[in-house]
Length: 218
Image (cartoon, rainbow, N blue to C red; front, side, top):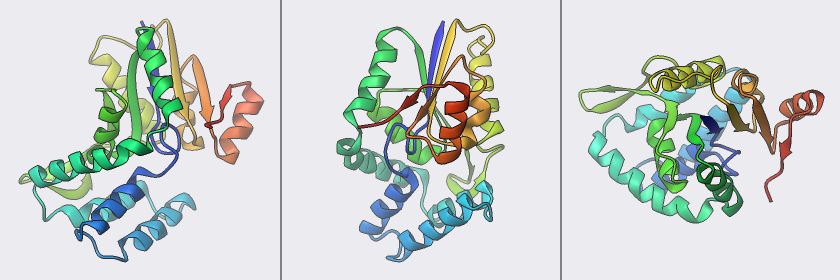
């Protein structure tokens, strides 16, 4: 068995899915017009280390708590249709190449499942391992249910997903993980074929030092 894993934001897609989702909701009047700048400010705090991923998830998801899951899923379907033209053909081809060779494929992302699953459908990847959101009385309450799919926890989520299929990274014939971020170093280091995709500066330095291939999107 061979495995191919793909990060989402700035890897399979050349943009931040959370920002795209925010703009989508602003355009529909669900969020206020300043939501985009507010989200960007939180993202900047997250990148510079002054905001924890749980806090970022809270501020991103909490405004949707007043809507039921049925409404959110309908919006997610509309969001999927809007995102379809923005999927890079070369990344879709990369995924299809792995699928065509019979590899087990999954998208693994820190993004909340509500935003990530539409991209799973766009790429034809049924298995999406994303940050789980806590559901209370049929609605999201903003909290993460368990551990975020981020950093070392991303590796943990992958291990659990594989274990449910009676598989493990240690026993797979080969495994790939494509990512742009140094935060994914735990999972990159756990696969047999790590690939840096348009990597950030720290991951680029790591890839060059380790001799990992670097994939530059067109």
